[in-house]
Amino acid sequence: MNPDNQMRQEEVVKNKTKAFNAVFNKNVIYKGCLWLGLITVASIAVIFFYNHTGDTVKALSSIKIKFIFVCLVMLFTDLMLGSWRNHIFIRKLYPKISHWVSFQANVVNIFMGAVTPFHSGAAPGQIYVYNRHHVKVLDAFIVSLINMGSTLLFMPMAGIFAIFIMNNELDSGMIVMLLKYGFSVFFILLLAFLLAFWKPLWVGMMLKKLSRAFGNIFASKKVKAEKWGLTSFNNILKYQQLCSKLLKQNPMLFPTSLLITTLLYFNKYCMQYVILLGLGVRPDLLEVISIQILIQFMIYFAPSPGGSGFAEAGIAVLFAKIVPASVLSIFILLQRSFLLFIPALIGAFVVIALLKKHTTEANRP
Image (tube, rainbow, N blue to C red; front, side, top):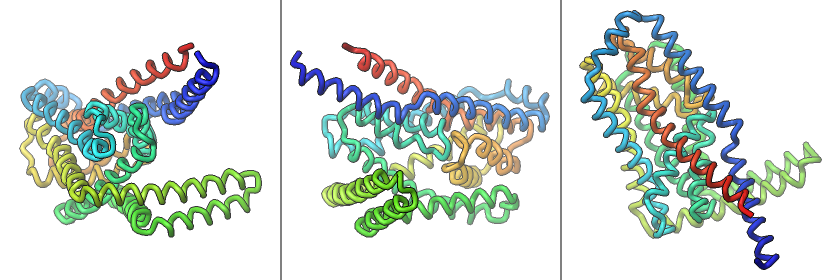
């Protein structure tokens, strides 16, 4: 092999290894999985022992299996909708990319979001999967950001609807506090998303000024900070140009993304209703959907991995009014399993496959 070509290949492998380690930090993943498991088990155990454990075991044996199969179908629908939400954009930029790649990116997104605080690892994991299939990082980032825009528009509107339906029942201080936190985070991110699209120069200049000010305060970080500010400025301009071009050439893409987002979350919300039917509970569908909207809204940017602890507490407080105490802990376990644990487990298998493939490439002479 030509020495120059060999050096280039080694440099490519080195860069890929650096990017891989930055996204799939093993220590972060291990700790995230550990905390997700410990907090979830502890939360469900507290709820289980607080309620009637004998009745709970009895209720467990009376689960109607046909509803579990319906939930599995709804889970498959959830994963397909999540992957299609990305794929409708990716295929416009890279027509040869298969839907299977988008499916892998989606489940890795779920897994990395589940094991990192504030859902912070989700987008980097998804972007890395696309990049492994020769999608430019900026292109994958833009697709992720556009779909985040759909979520940022949908979730607050759904939250307002749920609050209108549940207004007289929101008497818990913790729930109200989490809702305020959720609305604050969504509002800030939506504002940043809109400004980056409509006022990219303004946002870019602001970031450059902030990085320059940071460099003046911390002299040792000045060069690195100014470089980050310039890179951010250029990336925001590229983001706005590519995003504008993509959406102008395909004006129905964003409305389609918003529609898929609505169907995606509606399917998630209805899954709780099916689980309750399987447990022998006959609740009001609209009330179940409203409660689940609030729970999803509160935990989306929770500081614990996968919203663990916050999710179980929110479910226990809000669903306790319509779910018998004897089945509450089972319902929480099934709800978290179908909405998070099973999809995250699928994503974990994809991440393990990536780890094996990456290790083989890195060790290849």
